[in-house]
Length: 552
Image (tube, rainbow, N blue to C red; front, side, top):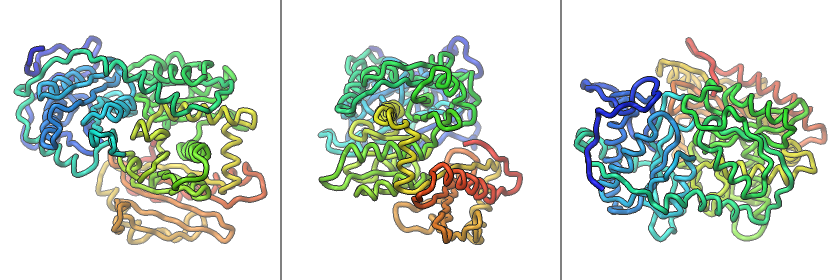
């Protein structure tokens, strides 16, 4: 192996559309730059300090390495993985080779693969860190750099393999700032490693262990990985767990960084799962599963009375969480189950009824997986589910898909997941949730709406009196830039809306929920009435100047 410096004159990948991930340009003083946060780096693949390119990744990795050395991790194992987006191979090569030149024991996963494999390997191999090159479900022009941190080398750190939290992000950003030009950062080629080649099999073995004892009744599953890297691993996982009748959306199965069949490669976006639901209907499937491109999110489709539909993240989260708790059973210390403050409250109510320690956290799995121990499940409404915290301390779409399959299998002779959801609504009350997003390109418009909500909040929503709680005024771990509006009517119907600025886009986000207590009447009748109320509530929320309604 020979050390070498980064070369900026390499040719772009064959067929590359747009700029090369290796290209560079002079950066005038004051140019915007990508900054390193708890989610790492994410941005468009383009030249310059404000883009994802080899220079940016090289300097970020050198800074991360220097910080790890100051933390006493000199020479420790570090896992590196990548998806199949534009630039991912070049960025992964820069990452592993800079780390190797810094003296770290680099475990580079051999093929493009899902993000959960890096989270799993970081924890399983007791690595000091893991780096995943991915932009998850962002548009095709983007890429990113996601960092997991290991824990104590004895394996006793419950948060090992979780995303980093402050102040580590600020310290790493400072270390990156201190790095010189990318061309001066040494690189060292990395040989294939048998530990890396064994990661996928280790992950699948853990899945079969996690679901040991669950019976896989015959089930037909429709699957799309949405042009991402989760398809092959998901098929292997389904087969290992006894689900062999899986039909795939052929035109979305192989990785394609341009995501040609969808406007946005996010299962939450309108139209993104149309091909999946058509396949499920055409093949008379029992369950439909959509993974996002890096397979850390899972969306589930079911056949309802009016045909196929996608469950919301809150519906899936409640079903999976209750399934985990019912599997754990009573006895022993209370298990911890976590959901974020923007998620619905159905799981929270069901968990409390089962004697669990139900906790709410800020948004993001960096907080959810640190909610407390013994953690058995965590989710947030944006299709993220952590069903096996012992193995993967992050959201994991593949293991969530397996958990959904087993749950659907258990309910296969009782009406499937729709019947399971109806039973939960009869137990805890009907809960309906829906989001609304408002794109406001001027940050001042977002700040003005938030200020107005704090000073003059609405007195009613949908005819129900509401009060406002300013989360920016909290003094606990839930302090954040958000406002919660809650209230209930004389008939017990309740409304809840959480409002916050997006942390990654120029959007204001509203998370709405309406609920009604358990009743002897038809769940479908109550749901229909609540769906009309929820639409009314969301329509009454502010629009602001020049606000443009948008998807997620």
